[in-house]
Image (cartoon, rainbow, N blue to C red; front, top):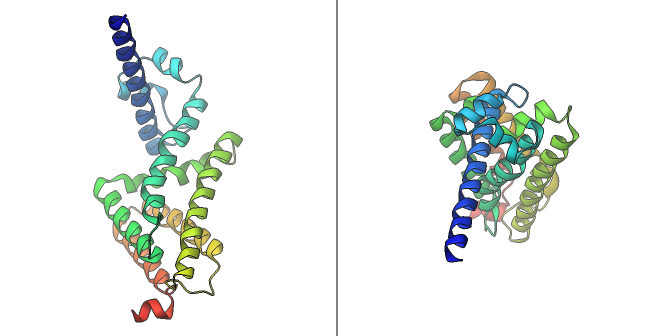
Length: 215
């Protein structure tokens, strides 16, 4: 019995690992080439699995794409943009820091040349596939909501101007992220991307309350 349980445990782990390899390979393939241009052949080659294995875990390319949004892109956004806002005392500094950090990291890794994976799929697939559209909008809605809550908390703590609308401002910041990464993708000019980020940082400085500036 112990031997059987051990074998089942190893089998489950191998199955989980295979599925993760396929998802990670799909994420990179769709980020580089788009969903429609993404090749299942390149995905299985990168994951070092067979097409049979891919279709064992995902019934279709569409299902694989949905899983990439739900299981990789959504959590990536949470780690990057949402976690820094959790319980922070100064949301403006937290947002500025996140933009500077991730612009620098993406330029350093070269991933900026492919743009934002979420925005890419939004532009490509939202007009074509309701499953993609609803998933992507859910991610963006969560992003806007977390930023809005953080800004409202900043107002309550006297760190953010009381005359701003937190929801509208959060919406603008999220749209700005899309624009900055889109600028990097189309221009291939890292200086332009950095300048865009710094311009957003200066805008965010205007949201500070006079008391916060004085301190």
